[in-house]
Length: 282
Image 1 (tube, rainbow, N blue to C red):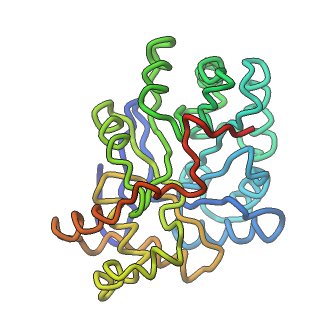
Image 2 (image 1 turned 180 degrees about the horizontal axis):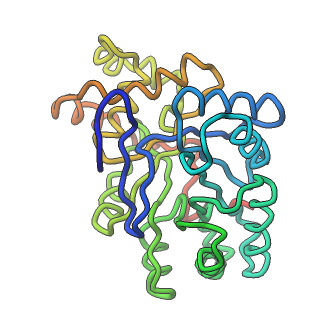
Image 3 (image 1 turned 30 degrees about the vertical axis):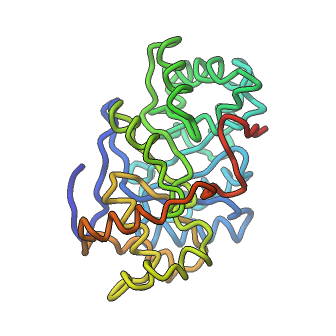
C-alpha cells in the first residue's frame, strides 16, 4: 500500500504486479444517459476505480463517462464481472469481447466471476476463460466475487492461477472475518460491495453515530473498511456524497473504535441472505 494523504487515493499492490486504488465507485443502478453523467461526475470528483458488471447493464454508460471526462484512460481503473449464465468457456470469452465493445475500451483492468454458482458447477470453466482473456490482452487482472475459500482453493488446484481480488458483501453488520483472513493469508485483496449497505439502519446505529464527530457515519464506515485493508466501492449519484465518501484518508480510528465496530457483526447480517453456497445468479 502506498501514499496516505488527503490529496491522493492510496493504492494496493495486486499479486500480479498491477496496482488498484484503495477505494472505488460502484455503478449499479446508474444506467443510460443520466447514469453516464453520474459516473462522469464521480470521475471529476476524484474517483479512479469504476466498478461495473455485465449484469448491471451499464458498461456502455461507464465507457461514455470515461470518454466525456478529461481524465485519461490510463488513470482510470475499470472492473467488470461475468454473469453466471455466461460461464460456458466459449460464451464467457465472447462475453468479455462484448464488454470491450460496449465500453469502447481496448482492455478492461479487472474482470471478475460475479458468483460461484456452485450448483451449476461451471465456475472453473469460466475461470479458464478469464485466464485466456488475460492472455489475449482483453483484461489485465482477473479475480472473483462472492467466492468462499473452498471455491478459490478449487480454482487454484485445477488451474494454478490465483485471483487477485475477492469482492464480497462486507459492512459493519457482516464483517466476514473468516473470508478476510483467508484472502489476506493468500495475498488476495478483499473488496467490499455495498460497504454502506442497509444504509438506514447502519447509519442510525448508536455506536456509529457516537463515533461520527467531525466526520459523518458513512466516512467512519469506509475508514473502518480501509483500516482492515479492505477496498470499499460505495455508490452514490449525489455529488456531495461522492466527495464525502472519498474524504477518509485524513483521520484514523483507534484500535478500540475498530474493535467496537467489529462487534456490530450479526449472524443474520447478510443482505437478502445471499449465501454464495446456495445463491445462484444468472
